[in-house]
Image 1 (cartoon, chains in turn purple, brown):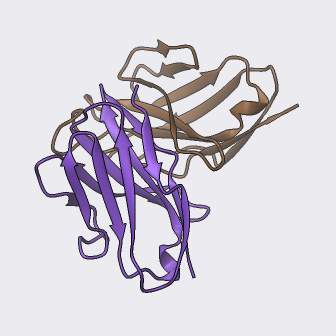
Image 2 (tube, rainbow over the protein chains, first blue to last red):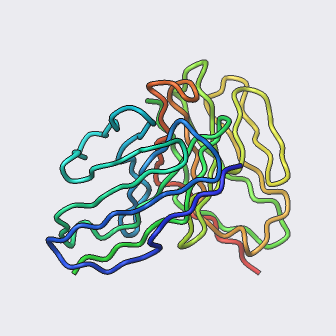
Length: 112
Length: 114
């Protein structure tokens, strides 16, 4: 299995600011993913981040709003830019290891 | 993408088997079925996956029909800690491939009652 650590676990932010979420995994993985879970909803894939290439974004998500870095095989960041209250969600990091996707505990973001 | 259909909610008595159904009638021949669960305020937890044969691990059993159009996740002896949302997902693309994707639907809220 893969153990994923996300930081911060939660935050309260002011509108118009940006927050960078960090994801650290305890083993080297090729594929990492970022999901969003809005209140009372299921998970929605934001983007797939492979080391050494640009992240691939899903429909409805753009790089200017959710820039992603993937500097090595164990680490990734997701930035939520120019936040509005509609960005209040749980953001989850996930990795693919041996045909199984593992998830972090998530970052609970509230935007005021 | 193959879509899945699950009941919105189910109840189960503690100690009894919980049988969670999933329909995936448009599944393709090489697409796997994955099950995850999400306990309140936690990240999703992998349970089991399969292609066409029945599978069993320490958490659950997965029964896939011969035509692969539906499956059932079985928790043999449900406990209160099994209360969670259970997601049935058809994996798109080869693992690690360029079109690989795991798309979550609404899932089934399983409530285990004492």
